[in-house]
Length: 324
Ligand code: NCD
Picture 1 (cartoon, helix red, strand yellow):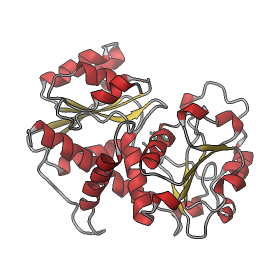
Picture 2: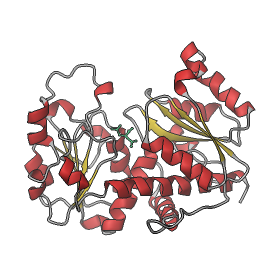
Picture 3: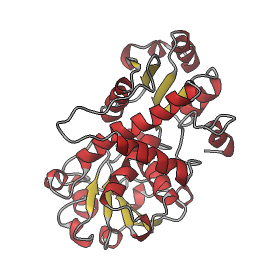
Picture 4: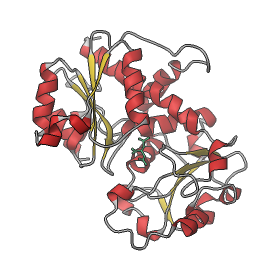
């Protein structure tokens, strides 16, 4: 993201208006969002937290790529803050008939959609929409190609903070298809903003990222070395939909034994290390099913935190809209 896009996230008063990337979100703002999110967590079985910051507003979910968790999570977060939520059905939307994205956006604006939550397979779409909407409208990036997935990064660091708030003395290992992962990018940015001690990115060479995308991270192609004494292990799916040519990517069995987050491979990490995954999981490929369901896994906690983090972001956006 360039500097202009970075500036685009804030209004003239310096308030967060769009959330396009975690680049440019400083430590104090990030911490405020995480603290707000934490205030929305309730005990299991208790009714979920609610608020009124978006009362009278409309949130439009525009997911031009598949999604289960993120879309459901934004939907619930918007409703729990009092908004109407419009879930655009992408398969029947006019974009399939060739309508430009801007025509779709102008149509929704004309219906008083105030917050556009956007997921798209192309780079730059959230920022492009943000540049073209009316002054009162906010755009939230819900997954942009392999570039950025800011609310996922926020929920990941919230989950890690609940386990251990001492980021400076922590080693976090992200394992899998780093090259095509927007989750790896946003999680890394958030971790580095919070001063993580060590960040290791583990993948087969064919799925390794450009080092410049991850300044300060260690890129490793050996899981034993990468997981050694790690405190947090994040497993990622192979993003087949973003890979033109799978040559050089190991077959399933080889992948699972060399790069799978398994009970066996976790022996290299610290005994109390937690296991994370953004979903959707491919059990037996990038993660062992029993580990995902076991006591070290915080995967469902990530999902719970996802709603809370999206409520925290929407609350800020809603307050700005109401001039509070
Ligand atoms: C991720 C995504 O869509 O980027 N999932 C999610 O948002 N929870 C990860 C993935 O698809 O592998």
